Amino acid sequence: MTDYCEEQRNELEALESIYPDSFTVVSENPASFTIRVTSETGENEEIEATLQFTYVEKYPDDPPKFEIATHENLQNSDTADIMSLLTEQAQENIGMVMIFTLVTAVQEKLNEIVDQIKSRKEMEKLLKEKEAEEIEKAIFHGTPVTIENFLSWKARFDAELTEMKKKQKEDEQGGKVKLTGKQQFETDHNLDTSDIQFLEEGNNVEVDESLFQDMDDLELDDDDDPDYNPDLESDND
Image (cartoon, rainbow, N blue to C red; front, side, top):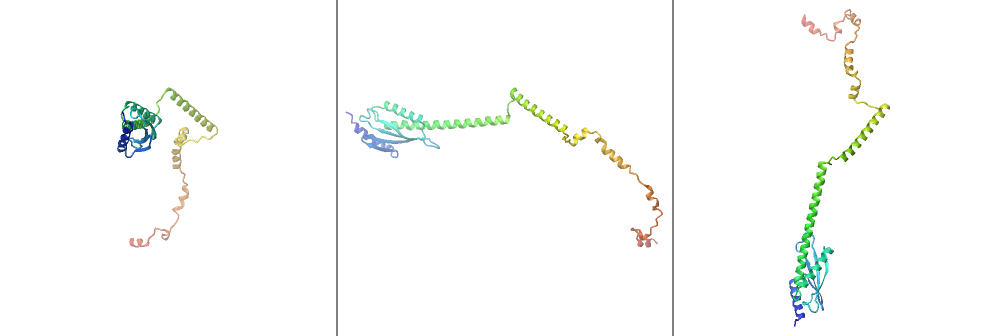
């Protein structure tokens, strides 16, 4: 006859030795305890689940009761998968002490979830990088010309050109047109010869010679000559 109490007591001692930092007794009758399980491959965030087990009278011939007491960074779908895994493993190990086997299965499941999270983050990173590259290509190459966007641009261009011509005509009618030097030169061909005519007219200055006729009759003393030097004259003598 199986001594269920003895088997349960021996397993509790073994579990407390295996998980000294994560094993906690909740009650002694019935025997209930928790084991905290943490992922081994977590990087920036840790995945954790605290499993609570309770022995039934005929354990291990009957499976123990179990639940997820607390957890961190697990989705609802993850906790559902863990509970399904525990149920499956418990049925496969009927007749043998199984808590270590159940905890090990959950440990592997948490590591698998961490790997999935890492893969998902890497995929999201790649998608963002690819999206950034596509945006950069679109900016660099510009928008491809199609019939639709060309006709739209042509319509806007024609409308702007018509508006400019209309405004120019209104300014001309109102006498507000301001021509540039080049435009004045092109429209008034008299400007071509204006500078030449001015120079020719400047050379035809009329001089009244009578103003200088009496200059020879004037007697100027040497003293009145500002350039007169008597010393030079004595040297000549």
